[in-house]
Amino acid sequence: IDAAKRASGVESQMAAEELRARRRELSYQVTRAYYEVLLAERRAEVAKTSIERSREGLDMIELRYAEQDALKVELLGAEGQLAADELALLQATNDLDLARRSLNRLLGRPQEGELNLSDFLEGNLQVPPEATGVENAAAANPGVRMAGLSVEQADAAFGSAQSLSRPKLELSAIYTWIDNELFFEGQYAGAVVNLSIPFFQDIRAGSAAKQRARAQKTRADAMLADAISVVELQAIAAYRDLEEKLTAVEAARKNLEYHRERYRVTQSGYREEMVTFSDVLDSHDDLRQAELGLSGAHFQTRIQEAEIRRLAGN
Image (cartoon, rainbow, N blue to C red; front, top):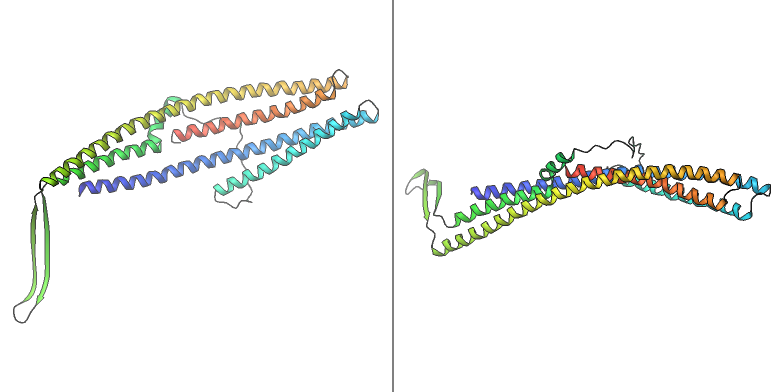
């Protein structure tokens, strides 16, 4: 009976752990969707800024074309660049709308509801120190916790197997009311005790059950040790990935600074007729990609932060 109670308790804990794992996954999904909205907002801002630059370039080309200082191909190029940037803004706006709807759905809100997010992709990261994160990862991981419960379940199964080959006492209580005119009337109670002695086949069955339970316990212990090792390795790898992504942010920032200066120099060179307008268009595209690249690098860092917090149980 005790073994059955222990097994039932472990099953209850496993069910609670599955619910905890689902909540943990939902929390991560909400966090990711939150940052996807921030990234989509940033992309829309980049598209708007790019349109402003394209319009400035088109105004300059139209003025020079009217004075016959620019070629028709340059005017067409400026118009094409503006059209491409307007298309990029439309795509970014649609992506932003879908990202907001997705986050609202995860939050259980109407999809059309307004979202005013106060965070920034460039904000400070909040991750525990590597030693603390790796140490907490095993204790917080649902897979490790389930593996630990499997060990307890195997212990309960071994206790149940031991009971198969043991003698058993069964107590049966009797209570009744008798009303008989010929004999007697009144309440009567009693008890019967039965002793069950296991036979040879029961002993063999119990021995086999104990061997299976021992094998399950050994397997559960090995799976627990492996799960802990895997999770600790995942945590270490997550911190290494974060280090790489932080370095990528710095590289993207320097790349953006370069392309901003290159775009300025190229525009100045075109006014002085030292470069072609094709060079201006190329530097415009490169600048937009550099702006998007920095936002993407910040987004990847935020997602890695969420992954580490999930692994560490935060």
